[in-house]
Picture: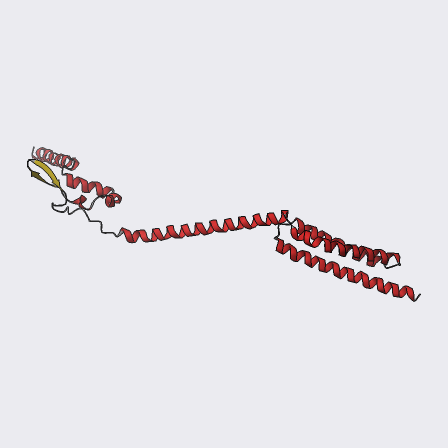
Length: 218
């Protein structure tokens, strides 16, 4: 009989303790602290007096809340983090990314303008026009000298070599003319090819003189 009474007594104590442990916290201050313990990241969104109990005072019969005047809740911790110091690296990163983005945009715009100018240079290749007449004169002189050399019994292999060289130079000139190079670069190329044509003209001129000398001694 005693064992039965002891068993029921223990069950009553355990049941009562479970009931009390499951009862909601009625104190609003402690309930606020418990909520913030679960959602600690929201602490900084609350005012500084959030963890202080509210003390109400009646003035002329009106109940006025006076926050921050009560005792501090021992379960709450004041957020002493310096958010300005934490924001400095973030703001520095933002400024750096902004600067890099602006720099990248400037580089892209510069490249775009350069390509646009190159395209314009291709469409308006005035250096080709400026150097074309002189170059045509050189080519005409080379053709005349080749005809003279061939007519006087010149070496056919020499004629073929000179003809191939002139053809190569003319093709390179066409490539430069159709390219997107700037006019200054095209001018350098055209003057270089004109110099090569002058060397060819000098060569065929010397060959003609040598051939004439040989024919005069025969």
